[in-house]
Image 1 (cartoon, rainbow, N blue to C red):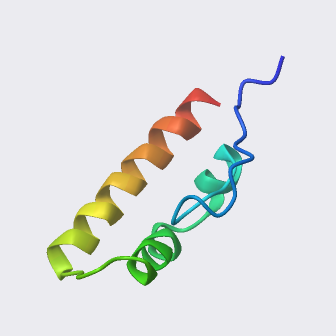
Image 2 (spheres, rainbow, N blue to C red):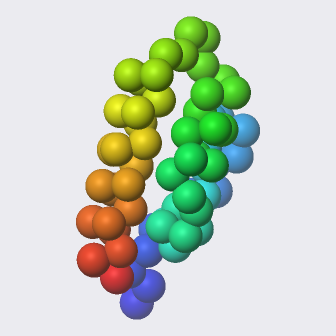
Length: 64
């Protein structure tokens, strides 16, 4: 049984990727995609997203 769940939801999120793709993607690339769709972005917000993304990538990678 596959331990990853894949989303088929396209066009409804600012970032969409498989779990393995998310783990391989750089946090700066993901933040860049989020920033493109954000209303007003500041350094604190982009840093917070970057930190949260890196932490989630580490935890997901550890589950694999």
